[in-house]
Amino acid sequence: MARILIVDDDRSIRRTLEKFLGSEGYEVTTAQDAPGAIEASAGGFDLMLLDLGLPGGSGFDVLAALQDREDKPTVVVVTARDDMQSTVKAIQLGAYEYLVKPVDIDRLRDVVRTALDSREVRSELVELGVSGAAAGEILGKSTQIRDVWKQIGAVSTTRAPVLIRGESGTGKELVAKAIHMASAAREQPFIALNCTALAPGVLESELFGHVKGAFTGAVADRPGRFELAGKGTLFLDEIAEIPLELQAKLLRVLQERTFERVGDAKQMQHEARIIAATHRDLTQMVKQGTFREDLYYRLRVVEITLPPLRERASDIPILVEGLLAKINRDLAKDIRFVTPAALAKLSSYAWPGNVRELENTLTRATVLAKSDVLDETSLALGVDTAATPATADAAVTSDGELPTLREIERRHIGRVLAHTEWNKRRTCAILDISRPTLDRKIEEYGLRKEEPPA
Image 1 (cartoon, rainbow, N blue to C red):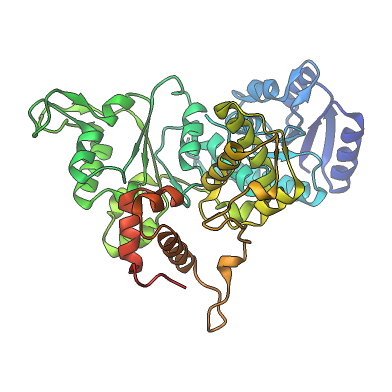
Image 2: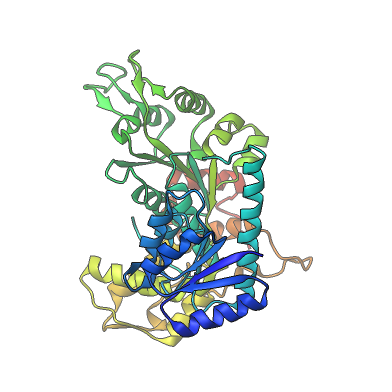
């Protein structure tokens, strides 16, 4: 019979959980404060349900006290604190799961069973002699974004390479910064490089640096991003855009942990943690021979996939509130209200540009606002001034089938090009992409000025 310790300062919650878990066949004990939890946890419990807000300390104190114990219980945090910082910190301190009150009873039952099953498997592995392998705010409350918080908490305790995947505008750099700020290297540099913004020759110099005279225009020694990152974090955004020749050099650096400035034979140590990001399908690129398979596996030791905003529409009200607070600070404005109609309009839009497009939309509306209220008339979504429902780009094709995401992207880029009369600078600004990326998309989709897509 598994033994469970319930730690909560609310007597009614303790009694409810005790009764429920007792009926499930578990042996249940309770504690009401942090010192009591720490003392009781030495009694050989398999699982602890832990609140964070406790008398005599906090749930974080309890987690910290359990860190070095060999026979510590598996801890499931059950709390009213529903924020990124608490989630990340709890996972860093070893929490198995993080549940927010009020907890669905079926969800609790499943988590308890899974946690106990995992503990049983782990104990069996130990008996067999097999050991396991040793910022900015990311807004939202959806299951998808909470999972991202947990992954940040988990990966920030190591220096393993991380590959962040997600559509443009989903917040890949924000996640990279959050991992850095939650890590032990938070005081070290965070250096970012967008690999789409530079020509191949310039990109190599930006990565590794160069010495005076290495090429025309190299009038002085210059450190590269690897050198500037030191023992901190190097974030390589849009890693898929690196040409094959440079991919081979990058792989060698990651394998050997050394690099050379362009034009110099002196070996320099590479000590930074690498976080890479892309919106492209690297698996498909590997199959096509446009991305090295060995580099792909070297980069994706840990992979975090960010959901597009259309798949977590429930987060839009929270994002609107948080983004407007930031925009107010940046622009010295005081937008305090959003009408229900405006919020409904924002929530029904497909957001092909994801959170970045939402922020740009709110920024534009704030600049043009004539009062402290944003209403639906101040919101210009997409190319047109009217909102595009989430289903608009999903209109059925002539054969009655829904279009693919690739087809939706092709249509949207074509419409923006037509709207700007093929002014590529304005098109890049609206789509929030670089000129090389736009040129590649035009070629990839076979877009022509005289033939905008339907």
